[in-house]
Length: 81
Image 1: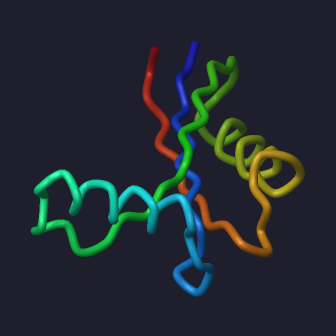
Image 2: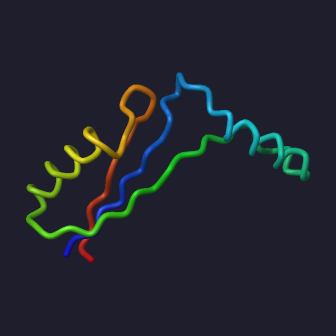
């Protein structure tokens, strides 16, 4: 069994209203050192297969369903479960 963590983030050119709201809230709470917040998502997968097959399949999954490639970027890490 292999565990894969897929990290999805908004592209730098895309405005992140959730991140902006979190930044303002943190600053209002006294964390003035916070200059920027970007919020993304984590997708955890558990898969069977060889590392080469898993890389190919996870890349396909991201492109076809898990990521909106117009506004999001992604990367993933593979580890043995």
